[in-house]
Image (cartoon, rainbow, N blue to C red; front, side, top):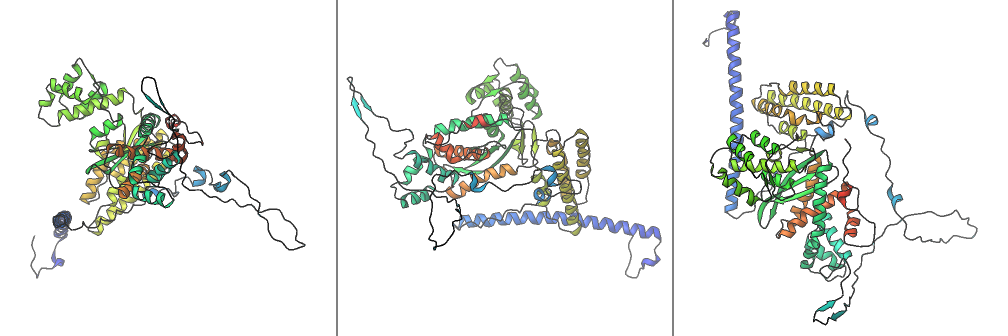
Length: 548
């Protein structure tokens, strides 16, 4: 119905007015959708424009633009720690905090009595004790005269150096270099500067050698920690970050629990690389029920699965053997989607992990990166809420929809924290129903509705805690662990040699594991370098299963 400039709304009937309002509402809705499309197109154009600017700067040899500041945390984790109307107070859920022991934990090495000059007639009132800590740091040079003998058959026998001597440096200096480089996050140049200023004659080459000296000893123990940690934990939290090696881009993957941390660096962060890391870095393949189930879930052709399951040999100890087997079955010649070689390899690796019980029933907790979606999988709630937090609404209606949704997620997150304190089947069923009510809502903001639909599709992973209350609700611990790798990357850049890459992963992982086990990394290094001091047992023996 059209109206001219002289038409009056007062002359319209109620039916005509209702039709007019409905038409206007439809127009408003159409405009709203157009605005959303234009907003998304503008954001995409801005990104493309910035990428072109960055490419122009690169071609001109100009320095890159400063990185954008990272998105601030939404605050959900800390906010939901505060008691809500239906959340137990801190006094009900945790014992009261006590003042730390401070210097009372120290053992006194010597006692010195200081006298005071008091005038005649003064009365003694005992002593005032003050504990003072100090450290002696000075160079010590030792000349070892190694006795030599010539045997009757012409061989030369030379006396062995004391245990711990490496690259012309004693064990105490070796320990200090490892502490400064890995725990202190110092560069080799700065370590040389500190030691030279103290009176030592040491070069950067010697420091680099000390960083990788006796690496096999630490590597064996770190692999034992990784294997024991995977089996002993009810969950394994994972994350990854960029890392450079030999001038090429790579990735460092973190594995952790409250009892251990391990890092693995490689050129790829694919699921194949992740599964190989779970196997300890060596490729082993097994065709069994777990492998077949994985391949079926990944939509691999049934004919390929049947051929693999019906083959006489179903265990392979190397990638070469496995690829020869796939070639013999004709799998490598197939050109279909999904890639049969990739899916079959992933399934066979997963079959080997299950056959060797590498995870021991542990849940894999991640931030929703696709390579981590294997086995019993759980998702991080902080990353899920961050998707809503990072939305950029264009209208007041959209901003209100985002704010209401975030409040509902925060409230539900607090309920999950309460459930972990006292889990029960009845409360789990109630929370599952509430999850559906929150994430099946339709707000009218198309981008938000699409996001809520995506999060609802991940219901099983987000609510894994209802089945396994011992697992965390977020991957904050992983992000804290991997910060050590990020700091090392910023301070020292990438690694060059293979031994340097392994040393970085192994020593950073051992330092983090010692911290979680309440063991001094200083004492740990001393025990392994045979320096007299506290005995530290093999770390793998200390990884008892975490209480559920």
